[in-house]
Image (cartoon, rainbow, N blue to C red; front, top):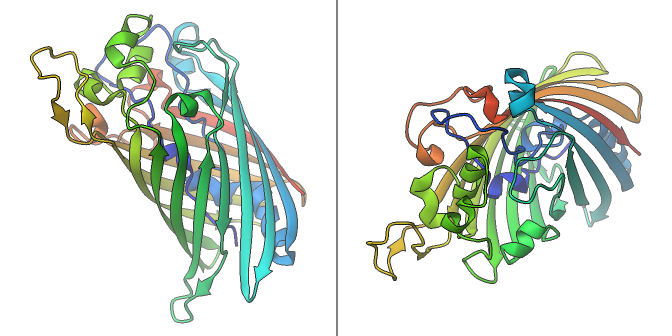
Length: 358
């Protein structure tokens, strides 16, 4: 059984969009390019499906995925809103027995490259991801009455990106669980994951939003710096302390080679308490806000085809955005979680993944 481990990308602060705002000259690249190895689609990847069989035998295995994602803004106006990028994932794993318990140790190495012109303050095309080390107990317990399999997991984030160094991140620890049950040709899974960030300071070394805004040329990049809109400026320089996400996905194995999956994940994060740094000069210097909060949803619809025992392909539509249209994503009208209502923001991506397992 493939263990679904929620990704830590959702625990990090992700740029959001405001559908009522004027379009930007070019949108910033998505914070996390959707791949077949994201939380909702972990079991959809052909390489991971092949790894399932290899894990039963124990020992080393290796999964490699190359994902190309195209943002919906490209279809609105390719000269203004285009996004096209690639993500390479290398996923080594070692399975062994500790007494009667099967354990799996995994390492996640990822990096993204944007082919289109980046719209960010640093203009960098290459975006590495932090390294993640995880340990899980696949199928630790199976309830005989319900047939539900219980698989816990623990993860450690190793800060290997300029963004994490700038935030003075020491590490991020996560604890998760996956509950899964086969029903005919369907596999139903529910996941939950909580994480705690540890930083040198609650405040990031990233310049506060008012200082950054003047250096940016586009509205979307400015929103990225502000978090959501100017109501959140007071929290923009504070790191995320706690995060939690819960998700569910259903996969359908049509044939030995062909499968389909639909998944949904809801994530919520809380920043450290800190001194206000907002633009309101009437606030006293020692004014304190409550912990800044943010909500995100991540959804995926994918079709996967296993070409051979080692190679597979996947076509998916993924959306990463706030659940509601208002500030912070917790007020306003609910959005369609599977498709962005503001296509130019590139919150929805169409991706093609080629995967290999050994």
